[in-house]
Image 1 (spheres, rainbow, N blue to C red):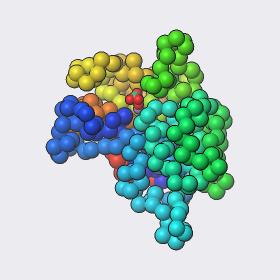
Image 2 (image 1 turned 135 degrees about the vertical axis):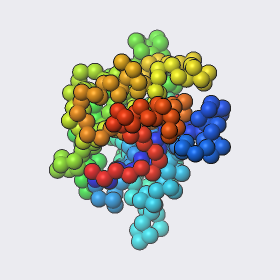
Image 3 (image 1 turned 120 degrees about the vertical axis):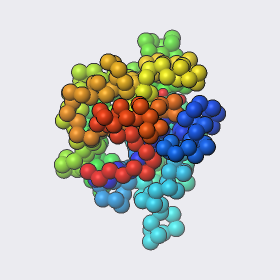
Image 4 (image 1 turned 90 degrees about the vertical axis):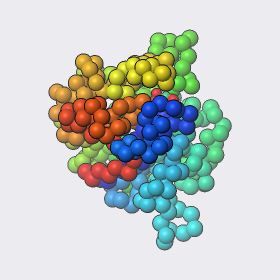
Length: 307
Ligand code: MLT
Ligand code: MN
């Protein structure tokens, strides 16, 4: 199974268009050790031929252009694409806006939770994905499904602690801004013989006992790397929100993801969906050294993993 990191940053990317924080400023200036990053998405393929996108970021057009595997096949006729399916982990703008780039009448299958599909259905701009050629398939949690008949990939989605998309927050509709189970999902992606598998969890508010049990012994996990410390966006005067408020657990400290993973025996741990405020983006920083020492990797655009 081949995995390509199309985008490794959280919403906004690095640099973010209106951000004058230190990371965005230095990335813009080309400071060494600080690579520009597009918004979080993976491409996965069992054979290097047919590809499934995990999330569709607003940067998808650039991501396709930057990754030759996703270009049309020269012998495949006037219009074709190796992208056969797209699986969404939530309704966040950084994960769904790229669907609009896939509007040229190309057939693929779109998998998402029932609530995310309802959100897409309720917004007529997404009808540019002609329902006659782009089937919207609701995901049933905890029930593995094949992404298509030939592809050889099986995906299982499961609910993780999180928050409903920012633009759907509604205090009147219940606790945590009306969040319901399944608004944020993690994905386990396996080869059809189940011989190889990995997890993709770009948003997660907490590793509870259920999630810890699920991840224990995994070969590879891509995990929410939004923030290093819960209040770093406030510290840098970029926002008034903590990570907890946004539905993201941070990396460091007693409540952080590095500590939570210590006992899970996961062979390979890669942070993804990294916010432009996060000091781990800067190679050589203390935070970067800390995550390396804890056995983590920091995803970058174009990173390739073969499982
Ligand atoms: C998030 O990951 O918290 C969201 O992408 C935030 C946003 O929509 O800007
Ligand atoms: Mn996001």
